[in-house]
Image (cartoon, rainbow, N blue to C red; front, side, top):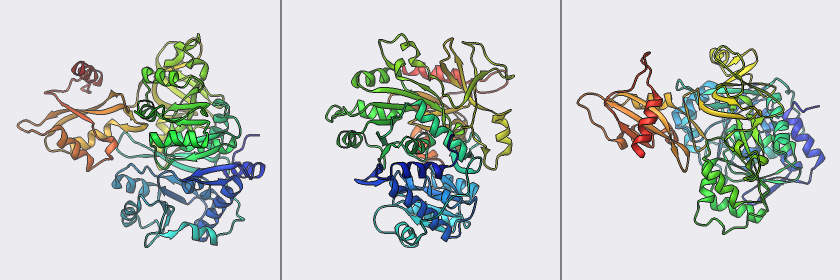
Length: 517
């Protein structure tokens, strides 16, 4: 029977393989038995601080072993984990905290000032716990002291449909949405990932992408389900990633396209022996076929898997297997697809009235299954818009071919994916429109060799006003995270409009393509 409790998932691997390596970080390795005990002690420490059932526990941190422990520890206190995007600006973090109201915030050494600024606005958050390296800053609780004093014999009372985590995703209205994922949702995705990626037991895995994102965070649970050893990078560095692969004989890695670009286009590529690699999973952002083919040619002994998903689906929806990555395979024409649906969920492409599309007919991708979220936290109207009769409407446009492979053609939602980060155009447009010189603006994604897509702003100025592109970019940086800000700006006299007075972004994209040719 499939596991429906994340703490039980951890206890199962810790009992079956107590001495096997679970996590390595900064040269320190924990066994599964040690890792599980520390997660239980974190739960006991949170209980001692007064954390009760359903309370939220925030985490603001780069990747670390302690952050990995926080993927389980709150559950032993019957609490809910809320990882924060450390790339947000402080006002965005405050907005997320005020929405989810965590009573405790775990913070590393890189975000202490941000955490203090957050606490000044969030009186409901009672404790800051330091999970970083080095001395504990004044006013913060020491993580190791709390664990040493805590009860290690604690058990969770939550499983199944009980809420486990809130993973925040960007919102088209400027407000982030807390995706409510249950124990059953995340367990279904973990089990399904092991099957879909054919993860063998006992391998080592490079955890290099930020785990506050579910694309990497969901894999934390899959690693436990498969008894895989996580080698954790605090933040991605292409040279350090290659060194770790060689030194620790890492077998598996998940890389967003921008990471692949940095590794395989680096001057030092080839300096390290990557012969231990057996598989690479990629996804979370558009990947140019040119880059993908170069990577496949550079690593002929590696199996490549593409994963397509969404935070709302826990996240995996479909996978493209190694056979379609073989240049000599008859399936090589499927390389532009996102593969076939995973076994643990159903996928349909539908017309606006909900009717199934025929093969080759473009419609909206919808998903149903045990991995699909419970809804958006405190947003019943938004939940009702995307969850219809048990089907999650992704907002992605696509079609199935005659062989059942899913091809994405565009995003119905107005969203750009840059370096694995979701950037919602309306959010950037709101920031730009606050500048006094801006009369009208529109934001589009443009191809970018390094990041997959880059944010481009098209501006109509107020009559008699002038402003430089750089000044507009700096203006945005005072309001939204840097990765959301435009990388380039163009100025036009008038926006192209449809008969319904909506900006024709297809024309803006065509104009930009002509401008760079």
